[in-house]
Length: 353
Image (tube, rainbow, N blue to C red; front, side, top):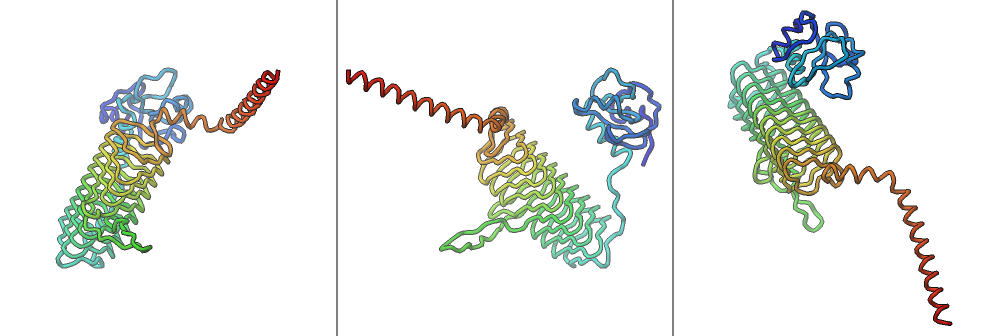
């Protein structure tokens, strides 16, 4: 852990200081939990009141903030600046340098790049190609003909099935499975017959896959995860799905086969997306939505079935009033029936006269 002055941190992130630039910063924390020597950040205005009570030595903000005695580091993007400072002060996880363990099972036909660290009981299969600087933890399985780029991190018990292609700087967290057979069956006379899945999974550069994710290989074409995508835990991607660059998929997202997502999409937790649809670029899908139709680029949708956000908010805000509305409608129906009966009675009396 490093110690820096607030002024040094401001220079590092291209920001400026309001207050004492010589304050020593040694760590980072939230506004509520910070103490002396910590730097925090304000990226959401609803937490602005905490500037009056925080014990942080400094706070990163996006603009000048009045009525606060805490020194400020003013940056164009406070959250991004906070990330940069976190990396500077704390760094990323360090991985023990072990070299290639003699207790790893590595095929004679596999090719291992320079400066790799392969831990005990990892398995590297026939004709696999491992790039330079890769870290493969215990219990990981790299299948036949797999291609792994440079500087990848494969955590314990990850399985990469045969033929899959992994780019550079890819991180796959523990217990995830890459390239298992897609959920493809032909039902005939009450039986479900397995369809061979002859595609593979292609994961492009700088992708991070969370814990316990499953990415299926394609039935005919490949399943593709675009550059820079980040997946949370327990994400399932169906066979032949294509996800564009820089998408964010939060935990427990499920996407059925042969669906296409554009670039920079954000998919909230527990979203379910049916197969064989197209989702455009820069689409945001709120948590727990059920997507059953194509979505044009730039849309924000929510609900099940998913609809445009503004319409959805109006619709779902009415749910709490439905019981009262039902009673009112029943009351109006009864009044209308009485009115009709009264009109019919009046008409009958007039006819008799």
